[in-house]
Each structure stands twice: as C-alpha cells, then as structure tokens.
Image (tube, rainbow, N blue to C red; front, side):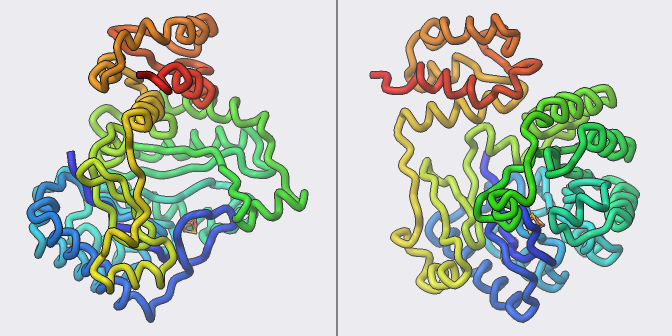
Length: 385
Ligand code: SF4
C-alpha cells in the first residue's frame, strides 16, 4: 500500500515536552509554507510520474494542522488533485486537531475537503497536569472539542492521552481513560511520556525540579489497556486501541513496512525501497524545495537485509498480530522459528509471549518488556549469513 503524509509544522504554543519538528504559529509564513509544500509535492510527481495517484490514504499531521486556515488547506488539496490524488477515492483522510483550534468552522472546512478521520490531542482531563506540561488548552476546551467531533455523523474520531507525566497518579490516569472511553469514540491512543533531554521538560527533569516515576508506567499501561478492552476498544498496536474495523489504515501501513511519501520539513518517506528524510529546519527545507528537491540534500537510510529484518521485528511485535516466522523466512532467514527457539522459550516461560499459527505475539506483561524481547530476537537474527 502507498500513503501520503503532510507535515504541518505550526503549533499554537510549543508544549514543554515537545521534541517534534514544529514552530509557533506564524500566519505571515503560511502562504510561503503552502507554496513550498505544493512545490515539493509536484517535484515528487515529476520524478515518479503516477505514483501519488496510487495513494490510498492521506494523513495531515504535525504540529497542528487544524491551525492552518481553510484557504490554505484548500490550496494543498487542490495541488494534490492536480497530481492525480483523487481524495474522494481515498480509503482514509486523517487530520490532527488540537482542542484550542477545534471549532465549527475548522471542523466544517476539514469535512468539506473530505477529511473522514480526526485525531484529537487531548492528553489529560487534569487541569494541573495540562499546565505542568505546557499544553495550551483547558480541560473545558478538550471536552467541547470531543463533544463537537463526536457529534459529526460518519466522522471517525480518535483521541490521544498521555501517561507517566510528572506528579501524575496511577488512579488519575485510569480515571482519564475511563472518562475518555465513555465518549462515543471508536479509537483511542495513549502514550507514555518520553522525556527528551532537549525539551523544556527534559531540562527541568535534569535540573531535578521534576521527576518521572518509572514505577507507575506498568500499572498505568496495563490498567489503561484493561479499561479500554472492557469497553470494546481492542489493542491492535502497543499504543492504539479500536473497535473492530476502525483501526487506522494509514498507521498500519507504516507498521506493515508499506511505502509512503512525506512532505514538509523533516517529513520521512519510503519510496522505491529507499527511506529518506527531508531537511528538518524550515529554512533548509525551503532551500531544498527551491533547488528542485535534489536527493543530495536528503538524509538517506540504506536498508540492507539486516536492517530490514530488525525493522520487521520492531514493527511486527508492536502490533497485536505479532511476528510471523513466514515473514522472516520470506526475507531469507532459514528455520527462523528454530533459530530463536531458546529465546522464545525464555519469554514463553514468563508468559510474556504466546506462540500460535507460526507466529509469536506479546501478551500480558510482555507489552511492558517489548524492548527487551525485540532486542533479544534482534541478537538472534543479526549477523546471519
Ligand atoms: S501540540 Fe504536539 S506537536 Fe505541537 S508543540 Fe505540542 S506536542 Fe508538539
């Protein structure tokens, strides 16, 4: 499957934990940004004629795409149409929203363009925590946004929560999950806070002003999973839960090693078996597009057989369907199951994985030890002849 990702790098305010390629809203450069984004799209089409017309999903992420005024979104969709993307035939068109820019007008504009899935960055219902991590919305704005989005018939809505935040209590997070899953949602995601040392929050943690309690990660994660599964939202990926049939098609393409083209500063692409990254810093990205998107200005990952195997391990085991040994054998690994027998037995013995139908899947506390399990298997399959 082939998918398209658009990176809209503007945010109302940069959150204290943010480590993404974003910048504060700058209405005076929207026009310029959109014109460069469109140029980048046209560049790819010139180099790979017909490729974009094969896209099955479109995802507008960021940043906060919902801060971009409707006229600019229309211009972007017009450009996509001009290179053969038929938005009416796409399986899924997703767009990320934040509560402060979710209103009748922004939702209407997205729906008119064909957006059929909105992902809301809610993070928590706790006012103190929102303030502590530097979010720009209030609890009330989050609830208003949820009510507005879930009132739209036919619109699929996801909402994101975060956990393991400084000072957060286990019960506080479980209450968030419980409260969120009482809204008529078909999809919920939750992510443990990953403190980047280069974020404002990371600086506060390294100065000792705030602490991350690693011991609360497990009861929060497992407790959250239990609540969602009880309410019919099944885990299909380590952080993603959906009612059957409402899983994100776009994100599953990433996890299934599918190809995609990304546009915007720092956007990743995987086209023709090559993974590459556009320049991350806005002026450098603008120079790259002005120069006609030369491949010399890209950062390129060369995927040899070993790195493809490692990628398969990481991407398969994070999904509930797990790792199929047939997929490893298709990559030339002979006797894949036998080769990892000792390692699999170790994790089976702890009930951290289950084995069935030629595959292994994480189970129970195994989800908490995902990194260890994947690393163990990576050691088995690295350096094979
Ligand atoms: S809304 Fe998301 S992308 Fe924007 S600053 Fe906050 S964490 Fe970063």
